[in-house]
Image 1 (tube, rainbow, N blue to C red):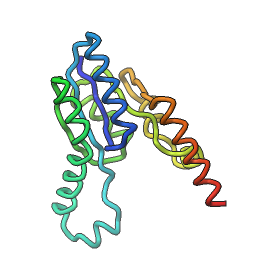
Image 2 (cartoon, rainbow, N blue to C red):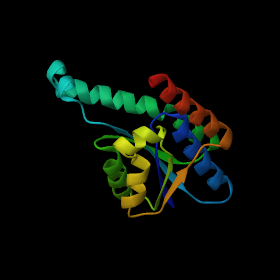
Image 3 (cartoon, helix red, strand yellow):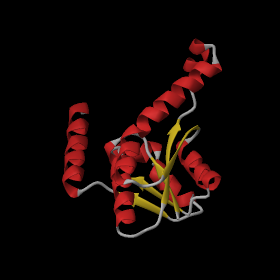
Image 4 (cartoon, helix red, strand yellow):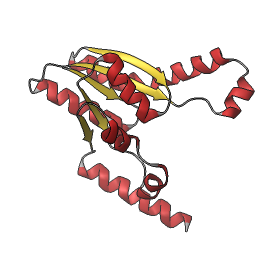
Length: 161
């Protein structure tokens, strides 16, 4: 089975990688595709850079950097994987990567933003879940980390009021 692991470099996305490794250690025969999606350059970046190749190089470098920790986890586990860095709208790019690589499933982290921001901007994991042609597993962090994240959101909201 080929499984897409979208990674943004966050600890939340690494929990998804750890979950996928646990599945493989439990007997699932899998080949993984570690992927990072870089958002397209902003108008400001296009105007100031004047060179599309420079912007592409920066995005590729940032994508490779975001994949490093996840790649280390898979390499240390001795599991087969491919790497891909693409540019585009994250949810659609993840769905496209599934088709490009012939993946039968997606394992990804839960969103890492607070409730207020999620309501305003939406969630990549939610959009992938809603539109994916293959099964999607959303991995949430352990409860201890969730409580810390929630406390951080509450203090951030309190500081802003």
